[in-house]
Image (cartoon, rainbow, N blue to C red; front, side, top):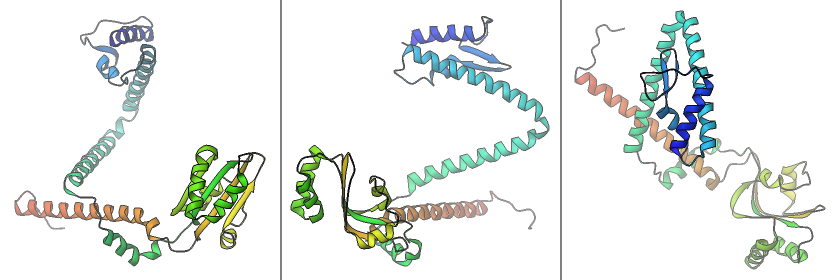
Length: 285
């Protein structure tokens, strides 16, 4: 495969160059633009393993052409932005420093910092910051069924879904394996009502009003019957339940722990450098 690919690739580059290929001191060279050379190894490293010879050739041709264009544009940019070179160099250096700093901080965090957050810490944060966890959507617990309109025993299913007791739920689950296009059970978790509503053809113009006054919904069109049991409701403007807010709180606490860790590390590094004489202030501001 690789052999065939290299033969095709060499042929491809020759065709790209309109048969103007010349000898070079770099045996692995594929193409040269000004003083920059693209090698076979560089191109080969970009071809995913298992790629066919034909696809490898297409990928190689595409990359080589893009590389040549990039080099040509870069050359023109360097020529026309000569006066801005110092500014660009400073920006590149600042970016390099920032990238090195970020990579090292991430490495430190992975090696030194645990991302385990105690449940009590999450609960404390929730209790003291409830004003930050106000719902901007309507949440429900319940179950949703989308069943073909001609499915067998549909009248029984309509009785089961309204009941919602353990026996009925077991029957619905068994029935759904063979007959339901969609079956979602979420008695034990909060779900965005809009996610469910998007699966139902009739438009509920006022979701809040609907949720205040309805515990079930049954809609039928020419193809399907849509059944919704609403066990619990939380409306926009109410405080998020703890279990819904918990994942986000954990992320907040982990990020805060990272910031505190980096701040402490930098402060310790600064003080050690002062004590060790690695930092010398010549004039106070």
